[in-house]
Structure formats: C-alpha cells, structure tokens
Image 1: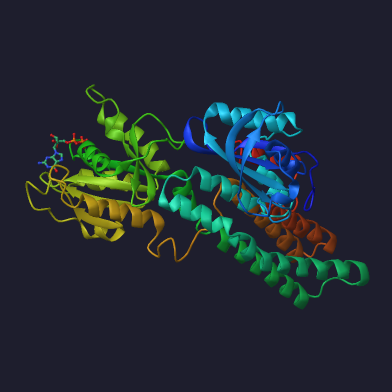
Image 2: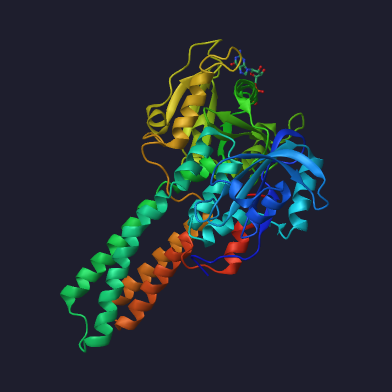
Length: 459
Ligand code: GDP
C-alpha cells in the first residue's frame, strides 16, 4: 500500500478558492502534467526548467488562446506529491479557470478528488499520515495557535518522537520472538522483570505523547469557556463586553451544544467559544434550578469556567454552593461590578483552587483584558504552549495511542501471569500495529478514504 506507490493517472484541480480573484492557481500531478502543459503552451519541452516560472499563453484543444499564464514545473520526486507536478498561475476568473481545467482534462488528465494531492504525497512517502492531517489543519486554521499547532505537526515532530519508542517495542518483541523459537524453558523471573520494565518504559513514552492532548484539542477545536454564577452577577454583561472586545471568528467550529448564547472569539490567538448559559430562557420565568441544570451540562463540556460574582452582593454561601458543582473544572473567579464597590473578600479555599481571581467591571471594562489573558493562560497551560507543544492533536491519533497502550497493558499482564510468549508477542504486535496506523505505516484504504475525504479539492 505504501510507500513509493506511483499513480499513472494525472490529476488536475484548482488549488485556490473558487470565485473571482486577481490570480488563481491550478495544479497538475502525474506523468502527463508536463506534456499537457507543454502542448497547451505550444512550446518545446526543454523550455520548461525545473522550479522556474515560465510565462506563456495557454491554449485549449482547438488551439484558442485562453490566458497568459505562469507555469512552474516540479520534476519528480522534488514536488509536493513526489510526482511530476506543474502549477499554472492564471487570472482568477472562474471562467478562465474552468477552461484551463477543461483543456487539461481534454488532454488526458482527470479531476482530482478531495485531498488527492496530499494523499499522493503520503503514498509516495513525502509525508506521514499525521503530517497529512497537519496540512488539512493548516489550511483550516483560523487563529495563531491553530496555525502554530498545525505547523509543528507538519514538521514531523510526532513521527520523530515516536521512532525511538517504536524501536524499543520492536526490541522487546524481537527478544520474545527469539525465545519463542530457540528457548525451551519459561522466562525466568529476572528476565521477566526486565521485560515488564521495558514494556512500562514504552508505555510511559506513549503516555508522554498524549499528555498535552487536551490543550491541542482546545486549540484545534476551540476552547469552551462557560460563564457561571448567580443570577444578576453580570454574566451576560461580561459576555457582551468580551464579545465586543475580542475579534469574533467568522466560521463556527462545529461540535458544541447550541442551547445557549455562544460566540466564537479570537482571544490572543486562541479560538474560544464563550458560552453564556444565563442566556437560556431569558425573559421567561425559568426556574433557577432548571437554569442550573442546563449550566451544569455546559460546564461538563467546558475547558474553563468563568465564575462571575456580584461584588455588591458579596461572595455568599450560594456562590460557594455553585462553585461546589463545578469543582472538577478549572475556574477563574471574576469579581464583577467593582465600579460600584471594592471587591469583597473571597474565601481562602476558593482562592486556592481558582486559577485566578480578578476584579473586573463589565460596565466600565476594567480588567477585561486581563480576563482574556487569564483565559488564554489557563487553557494553554502555565508552561506556555511553545515550550511544551502537544504531539497528539486529534482523536484518531489519540485512539491509536490508546489502542497501543491497551495492547501493551494486556501484554504486560500476560507476562506477569506467566503465560506463554506467544500470547505476549501477540499483544505487543498489536501495539506495534496501532502505532503503525498512527503514522500510516500500516493502514487500510478505508482509513485513508476517511481521512482524505475531509480535505478540500486541490489540496
Ligand atoms: P446575569 O444574570 O448574571 O447574566 O447578569 P446581567 O449581565 O444581566 O447583569 C445583571 C445586572 O447587573 C444588570 O442590570 C447589569 O446592567 C448590571 N451589571 C452587570 N455588570 C455590571 C458592572 O460591572 N457594573 C455595574 N454597575 N452593573 C453591572
């Protein structure tokens, strides 16, 4: 299935977005890329130099001039896909783009499927599967941190970190398999201890890879920040003030519940979905309890809770009770309405558990900037994202790691129970397969189809 698989089909697609633009880019990949373009330009093939733009007139199959274009030839294997690639920059008229693509089709290319360029790059060993996913994430990124996370993945860091872990696992497996073939007696206690230690080390390595997954998820999918607090504390006012302060993000990132007021914001480069559960049933006579029940559901999904307290009313037992219900979540206390009174004392126990306690005013905007800052720091972690980047960035990757860890645990148990090496080898091989699936060394058409169908055409 990989690597080095070549395709004899030549594919073509517009790489830039549809609609009118100053310039558009059309990309060809496959053996006919160069011949098609050479014919359309009506030039001799040796006029095209590797990676050097060539200015010419692109003709359709009836030899009608379509547009003045710049074409760049990337000979294999030094191209994005690893195949023969030609990029055509033309004027960004939808009509011209369609005509150029049609001329390529008429000369023997076929339309590319979504993600097919990247899929070919993967099949040719230019990228591993995690890097291919990073390409998709980079294209979809809307905030600084999303782009930065995708860039890191694209550099292949996960693959590099995974390699020694896999090698350790292969070593252990090789030892066991050798024993299986050549040694009659059972594993002695000392070797058993050593093997168990080895497996544990591999497992620790894998655990390290997934440690910052929650941060990566919050960056990729956006961090869910839920406003909580007593009625009238000022949650909606804080919501509105923050929404007006921060840049709202145009596109929604799907996957969160919809029965509350919510807005996507760019908080210092981080996509944040701010949720105001107080928005539920506004104007109606909804019981506080019902409101709390719903808030609870949102809070369960939250990456961070913004607990708003009415400074005029003070920090009361009701606030403490409410905080009890969110005790498992990281939270920030925002003492609101400090334009009216100075903030009352916050119980020491609460102060200790809170990520931060801030004195704000939704009305005058005092300290709202700090609040955004605290939100960002709480989600990304105190160490900062750059210092300790996340390595596992999506659920598929996490699933592979967890599967591998599950098999390792089974292998270790089998070893400790004194089962035959055959059983242990079976589990360790399964762990190895799961790791192979992670980077795509072992994969199925089905998995690839699922991943690449989420790409856009032309990528
Ligand atoms: P919620 O029920 O928690 O969503 O609270 P609201 O945002 O609806 O606010 C309740 C009341 O407090 C409203 O009359 C707001 O105008 C007022 N309020 C909210 N924040 C502040 C603030 O920072 N200063 C002052 N003076 N009033 C505020």
